[in-house]
Length: 433
Image: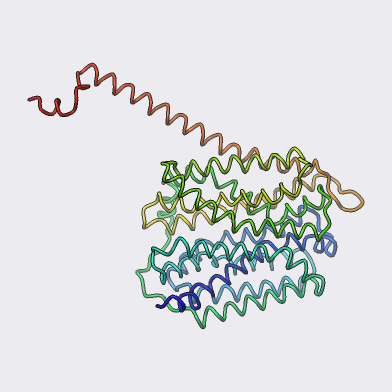
């Protein structure tokens, strides 16, 4: 298929789906003041509402993976984006929390396959040599969607309310679904395999999968759970920025995702040339990410703006776990491993987003409904401790492994010396038995 056709028929329709997925995942960060005021939501309720997307998204990861293999991304994405459109319409018409929760969960289900469908489609129709760059463009499309959920949404709210915004987003989902159904080619038939519990156990039993998940999973969940909602509330309640300034800062932070994703890839490739393992790069990045979160815990007032942007920029390091697992797993397990990662990440993001709101809600707001800085400091402190546990465990295991390697090398050297095997290898080989 010519390159222009691949772009128009394969990449563009599925990239638009991923764009909408990222936009709808993050849009509540800007809408939070309107939702809290109109529906009298507490921080715990707001966190639960926004995190319902992550929970439903995670629950359908395994079925979506099976459906993509069995029916192909074209048919699956058409059906699921229609479901997302229905969820957005239901959200626009909801009048109470329970209705909003169901609608938000329906959107999460409908958008759960956007990234995986795009990856599967471009992997089918694009040559392996071009996959890294094309997948980078796909991530950039998601970053653009996240950025569109900030300042552009804020500007749109000058002319329409949030309900009409979701009606427009529902129309966008329906249009993209139709584009995918009409334009995307049908992939060639492949042998059908089912995702069994044995396969799931095989993935989770892989040592590299476990080590990567222990180190990166919690920071990745924090990145998704916090940047999509609570950074904006922190900028309002603690830093006391107005909504226009918050929208600008969120826009800068989300746009930084594009730069961060590209930079992580370049740094990882440079480190590989220096014989530095990708997991070591991840550990260094996560240490920096935790240090930035300590700025929230310590209420680092000199640059609230810088903290909010750095949180998103450095948080892109967490995306490295997909590449680490893909490199370490057998080829037959890479797709299942990515599905397992998505499941765990989005379940974690649900817990982080809902739990953060529950902690903040333990304090009383002031007359302007601003929650105190100590509430956010406590919530960020809990997250730092949870992430620090994984980093300390990783460093301890690496140190223990290095110590064992050094001890074994010393023992082997001693045995070689005692048996006279320190002679040059050619001399040893020349000696008769």
